[in-house]
Length: 341
Image 1 (cartoon, helix red, strand yellow):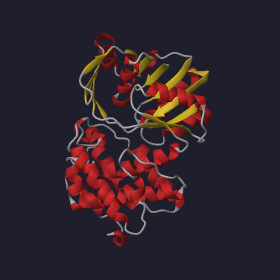
Image 2 (cartoon, helix red, strand yellow):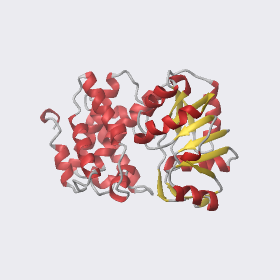
Image 3 (cartoon, rainbow, N blue to C red):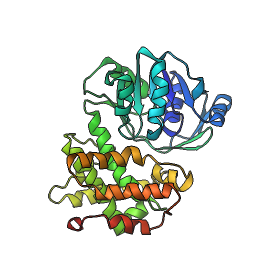
Image 4 (cartoon, rainbow, N blue to C red):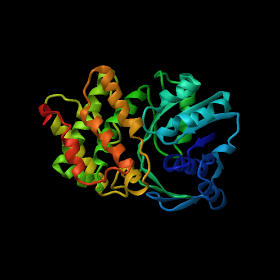
């Protein structure tokens, strides 16, 4: 398969390296000159769960991108989606299409520019981190799922599955929105626990961290369910456990226990959100993941006070107005309605 991958960071770089090794014609596109230079001259070094290997990838800068483009994997951070698709859309071939391999609901943004019929959804959950130019750390393997936005089954999904299996196990789904909203349930919890400079296990072991993680995920699950999306498993994380059915807290706590223990024993003991805030000091994807939960809740008449407060706290950390201390959990816990405590 001939593919252009726009965004050669943690996810895009990993996908491009593994697909290149398997013989696919891949061009990586990025905005960081040093990253592109090192990839072309030395190869892209992937370290971690599959050992350390340097992959001889082909890379260009974003302003060097020309058309016509056939298959594009869009792997930029969610808040860069609109700018990227504005650049891609005029260069897309008549039969070309874009696969959103991102966190959040970016498919809707992409479809506004190129149409839903030229947009393919993808759920991705494997862990990787961009360490420095030319270096990515790969932490674990989790299946990807691809699907058409209307739930139909098409030949291109079979082609994509075959190509992407160079990277991860791949499933074809008729319920891509169930995966994307299930991932937002996970993300609601992830943003809450990432307001503290500590591991996921440590935050979830704190009673305050546990309560805000539960409530943030429960709000997201309620919003997703109200829209009629059957929530899909996010690896071993079951978003349905956070639906407020009788006795739901028992199963939800079990899910969080397992998540904390799994991450504590892995190469990746923190969320990528923590990496953005504590290490890279850059903007997170909170506006593309938590904000849609809040906005959908308002549209549906479902209160989401914990997610609203998480967005506020994350923004303050991003702006340097707030540290990542344990007292952030007190602030988030105060947003939990008295009826839920």
